[in-house]
Image (cartoon, rainbow, N blue to C red; front, top):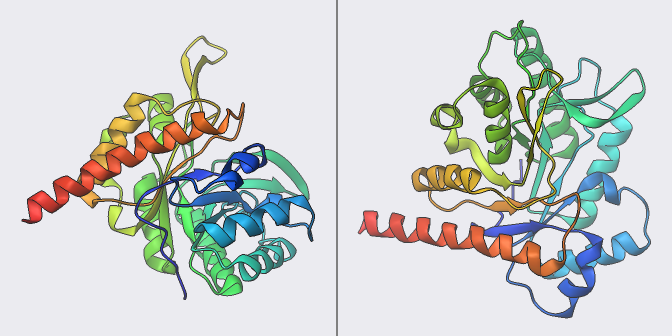
Length: 287
């Protein structure tokens, strides 16, 4: 299946609040990513802005509503809308979450986890196959942010993701903030998780901010909020990954409490500096 290639540099999530600044001059951003569901209408200002972005920058579509992890059949009408968006803008990449967000016609404003069992693995593989066949494009599947661990899970998350990718030919989107959040919430090691992640299947990396809270028992709880700068601990994990892989497309997500464009651009520049250092070290090691 066709699969484009995002630049091996740092990109930014596109927000309409930033359009005036972005359109005023060429920006030092390798690519922009949008949430596909925000552009499933026929036209208007959102599509006028997206046309400008697509004409001037590489583009990634990031879906939040395909319901890949659901026990129900995929919504074929949603898949058709996603395909139409693909055909209209021909993005370099398209991604979805290993999660579910609707059941019985009720849609939840969240990306919900699933147990990692042989039964759920078969369902996810079938859904990814159906989605890729419908789109005639390769998907990237993203590791979720988790706040609990299912007792019935029998497959480690990294093994589950790898099994899906090997069976379907999809790629993986490695969200390093999600790794950090999940590990902290479950008392695990994010470094150990990354050591077992199939990095050869990664087509894009996500970086974002989160905030620390407490659960009802007063225990620490990390919330994947996408409303603040990427913390140093997450950037250090990113350094660990690209030291092994070399440069990869890396997106800075900022979806809530959206700052002024220069603030987000500074975050992108910070990530790009790290990618540049990884590239230098890789070249030096090869010399």
